[in-house]
Amino acid sequence: MPVDCHQHLWPPRLVEALRRRTTFPYLRGWTLHLAGEAPYEVDPAAHDPGLRRRGELDEVVVSLSSPLGIEHLPADEGAELIALWHESALELGEPFRVWAAAPVAEADLGALTKTLSEERIAGLQLPATALSSPSGVEQAGPLLAAAEEAGKPVLIHPGPAPECDPGLPGWWPALVPYVSQLHQSWLAWHIAGRRQHPRLRIAFVALAGLAPLHHERLAARGGALGPLDPYVYYETSSYGPRAVDALVRVVGIDPIVHGSDKPYASRLECDFGAAFTHAVFTANPRHLLYGEPR
Image (cartoon, rainbow, N blue to C red):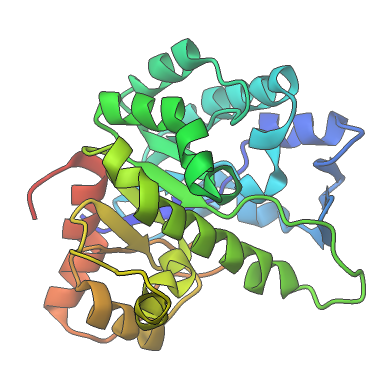
């Protein structure tokens, strides 16, 4: 049962809602406009559910794109788009399951609890920008607790990029603020998260920006990696064999879960043998998503 824990697919109703907006984030035709990134030409075929279903996976979990910044919009504004995301994404049918979303400042916890009770809701995605410090972890506590009580995992995804020099190359947001956000959120969780949420399964996309590889520097500056947390996971999107191999040497194979970040990247290609493939594409994702024994 191969699983992709992380794809993006915009249902038509969400696309139309983004086209109606006059402030960031918004679409003009298929051109995406964000506050911190250059206009991006979206390929319409990339958000065609029929084309996406032709893959080789039995289960795909799709999420709202946190770099859009929807979770950080004013409560009513963000809540309306998030409700539309839930409704339209749940209509996609098989093989898709859905990461829920929530406004990070003024979430409706009752609505989130109801959403998390849906069978095809895999868990809750939060932008890394909401957990950028131990105090951020505490402020997001009610959202994290809602997922924990529902027995469902949390996916930490880069949030919106800050405004940057327009002369920078298009890859700058993905390589600089996105990675920095993942480092901050991983370290904040390392300090404060597990103590506050002892039963929560949590995954960081893009191998947490390779944050665990800095454990030697962490130790040199007075910190410690400590015992490996069996409920922290690392999703593989945008990385390949070298990065995955390096991370496995620090955290082992059990926390590594496959995610492609389609349509912005592609599935992991690693010729590390059948046992590795089964662990990363099947067993580990099912432990993350369902709490199944490895």
